Image (cartoon, rainbow, N blue to C red):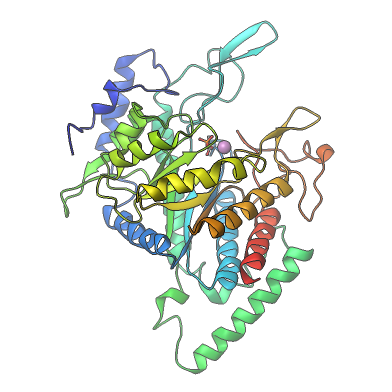
Length: 446
Ligand code: PEP
Ligand code: CO
């Protein structure tokens, strides 16, 4: 790999990165982080890559989801459990429709840094740096608290470590045992259409388990029934954090980012001379690349040559986010261009970021119907183009929030004020997420 090293990104164009006033503080934090244990292990990353290879061959489906921005203040066990649980439920629903394994990747345990359209925010006569995620500055509008503080990276590391600890316990310690498939239907999704459908599906899974048990297939001899693989991901935006957690793996001698299993490059930092592209090309982890209306297909192909020179299967996931009105204009051409160049990629659909609107009260929201519509068009376009819709990327939570309008709870504009908790973009709540999973499963069954 030509000229790559841990610092080589510093000689490229670094957008959406904070200016830390105190270089010495930054250095101290970086050194501390670099001395801390890895959050994920190279072997786990290799396992995810192998599973993504299956996605790219059409033998599995990728489900990626979680908060737009994790926050320090809403960090607690219930939040982590509820998001984990909804992802399990969605995976069960999708598996039943697709008859394929679902690879589960959370936007969790590190999704703290946000690119912002405006570097500063003005309130009244005061101006302050924009909020850039809890790993960088404070959400409260205050010119002092909004100054980027490198020590926040240490808090983020510690939160990510505790989050991963709990996720591993849930995934491996009995909570994810398929025999609990009915009890996952708790929390607020207990009544209504989604809940009834889910209960019905859970009952039929329960029957199959009883049947299999009679044949001698059970959780003791078939670990897949008892535990799940659950991976973590975030946008690799704050490069001092990512660099400090990047290590040489002692078993393979290769370089892995150990802050998450999967990293992605955002829509605003995806360009040929980008520091973020430079950093990501040096690590073995699978890499996602967001693609929106501003994506130039030739430039994207050149970026793929840099990040995936061996054209490895499962290495690259293109996460397309065009918006329901644009997907038809852009996606077919992008698919043709990537296919023409023979590039091996997984196509995943992010139906969130192209569908953000302002509500009457001025809050950012997204209409459930627009999200559904973009996903549906994605499936249709890939079918027409002979490519494969391999995954979905969602901003969602297990909580009963009111951030996206619509869905079977009929959340309206005036409901947004009641439980609007996101630190950045509006998320699907558990009910909406499960409803979307059922819709996808229905289309594929048809
Ligand atoms: C995000 O995923 O939160 C995000 C900022 O997306 P994009 O880079 O696609 O705008
Ligand atoms: Co977002």
